[in-house]
Length: 481
Image (tube, rainbow, N blue to C red; front, side):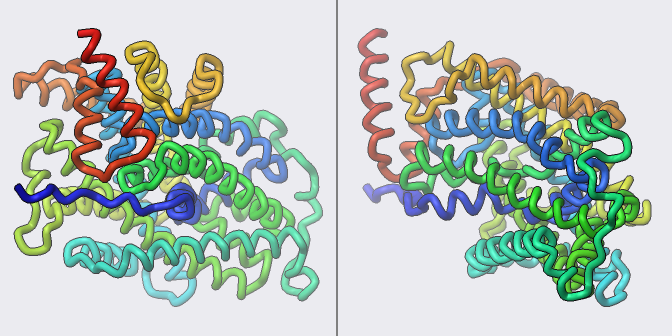
């Protein structure tokens, strides 16, 4: 019999770390950095530190879950053995379909706005062209693009950091292209501490998508080691990079301008380094919007493909194009979602309010998925206490509840869009119940972790230490039955 082809475990820490920090330079992440900097001023480092608490707890949770099941899965794979089919479906759809729908369209709008500022071509036309290129890349499978995108992401992050360092050191001022704003020199903004604490929810968006490193576990040489530490150091890197940029931005930029701007990070870069800074950040925004949009159109169809194979969504999403071997229906669905949001934000004039409403709505549903991941860890510890865990959340009984409370507080600060987010989550919950009932599937049916272990071992190459540990665990479990 011909041996089954398996994914190779070839990735090391650098590639995993790169995936964890890759979305720090997405268009909307940089927008949120500028927006929160305008609201919180020099106290942004405190606001972002509070937002980092639930993010770090989530990183610990995903680290443990990935170490347990080092496959190419996402939140649904970890939730199905812990909480069952309903929560697995809900977590993935509410956490990532809503995220990609809301953020994907706003990313392309921001890229279009930056291009319009630079060249004068209308934002709508540029955004549509960017989406068309993304479709071509994903349908026709430009193989070289994956490696090129990784390099582009690193370059963008370095350029973003350099702009922040230039602002912090006052290089633009020395060159005569930047002028300090004296009234911005204090620690607290005009509204004081309540204003700082009220921006925590938006500051969560600094860290968007750090867990996108988890699906690389299946091709990772030591996922139980590299993935958890990549998540942890990735969050620290994002925090430091953003805080350095905010320090320079607040020093030289009119905060009222940044508060209302659709591209506050571009305005800040212009204030930091004159036209050179503005052009550099404009180009960075265009590339960031494109690469993030491409990530989304690549990722969501494959998530839906995996869910369709598990009968969690319609089987049509499991169909591949006969020639290009890509999940065409998933790509079509994802593009439609992004296009709807793109049109909505464009009609709204691409205002900062329209962008904030969408990303903050997605932030709430995303945080709910993070809470579910933390609950997964606690449930699986109780249900499978002796299962091999090559990375464990330190003091999980304390760290994870603190993380959940932090996530709930961040949601509380976004109360003005909570109703809209709840409506979206109610629709998704109704879908999960109706779909399972219609197909005669138990809504709360839980997948045995043994099955998931088998799936990981069938799909990927032998993983030293983990394979040996789970083999021993399976033998002990069989002996007890």
